[in-house]
Amino acid sequence: MTPPDRPQLAAYLAAATEAARRGAAELKSWRARFSFREKSRADLVTDADHASQKVVKDYLLSAFPDHLFVGEEECVGKSPEDTRPPADAPPVWVVDPLDGTANYVHDVPAYCVSVGLWAGGRPAVGVIHDPRQNEVFAAAAGLGATLNGKPIRVSAVPDLAGGMISTGFPADYARQVRNLEAWARLAAHAQSIRRTGSTALNMAYLAAGRFDGYWAYDNYPWDVMAGAVLVSEAGGALTTIDGLPYDPFRPDILATNGRFHHELLAALGEAK
Image (tube, rainbow, N blue to C red; front, side):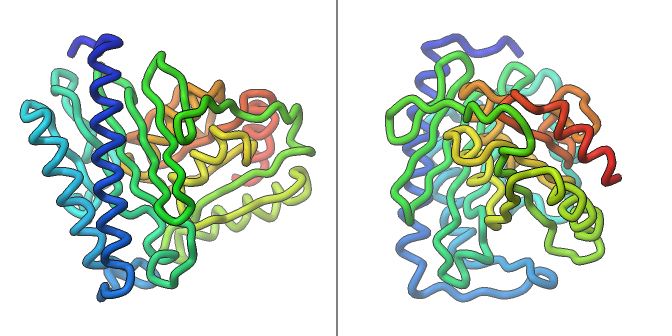
């Protein structure tokens, strides 16, 4: 498919912003009355997830009926590669209606709605709406990145020793071990390491200069699609963990402010 032009991107960004706002409103309305169940150990799904995804999906597909939609709640059991659109697919909305579900369940104010768009073979639009902090991070390819309408840039921290680095862990403990080893190794190199419980917010904070790097081994496209646009448009760097060109349909990711990307790659290589 031909990449969208600037007017199309602006229209898609406006729609993504409104869709994320509607999803966030659902999360607010459900916060005091949701019920939850365990999909697997420490991996919670709530009625709010489904309500948020429905309003986001309905809004986007009513605005763009020829587009496709990939949402977390309808892709349970699929691998990241299973969700990759065909090369000739129309634009695809890739949505996490509630990133940071465990935080939401426990009333920890670190969760959000993440709305990304894959178009022309790349992440094209990203909006991350944090309803607790009233923060809306938004970006589109070539149009820059903003926080509540004001431009944002990645930090100027020059090296790993001065960096605050974030990461994310899968719910399944057996798959956490590799990341725990990486954490232990990086702790000797970075200024500090953080785990917020929300991949999308980790990447939004990197784009806004709050964090200086982010790594993970077990993401899905809806976790990172919007954040990838934000980081790129804010001047950051993105690759896979082994330094290959970034691919949101692979589970691993390394994102930084671009100033010590290779240094962090090397440090993670020690942890493999």
